[in-house]
Image (cartoon, rainbow, N blue to C red; front, side, top):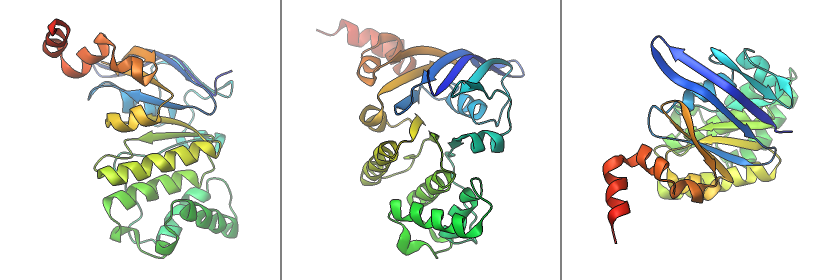
Length: 246
């Protein structure tokens, strides 16, 4: 049984279909990349899975139980948590206080939440910054803090939305290493990312979206050779030129 299963998911905004008849599954222990050009419907799909948008049609099941239409906090308590592309920490709070906010999703005990936050910050190699106010962080450290708040909820499925956006190559490598360690600790990962080095280096499998519909569900290597995927990303002219080259 898949950990997460999406069946026939649809979402319209007025006359615009953002996601149409989307179906895919995520197996326990895998890293699945959700990719596609800008406007393909990736973040909308994330928002429906995490409970921020109700789907117009379709069903979402987690560990065999329907979660369609549940509120974000209920879905979080069931073991699914997401990060956001634009990190917005509580600027006047310290790092440990920010991470404790995530910890309170799993416990009402302040001591337990602080202990969990300390463990998460140690995992992220940010223990020395725990008393720093969040507004003093670099962009990349804000991304790590966003990840830390998510991990403090003790998720089984982690939805990552462009966690290396704006990162330097070295920072992207550091984030990839963190995501691998998260998976080694038993957390399944569904990741939206535009940086192909990250997707190719991390994903066991990718689901490719275009105009809200599934274009491919395959290995990253197979997606990179798929003419329909190349056309969606690069356009007919490039694909036609590439196919006619000697």
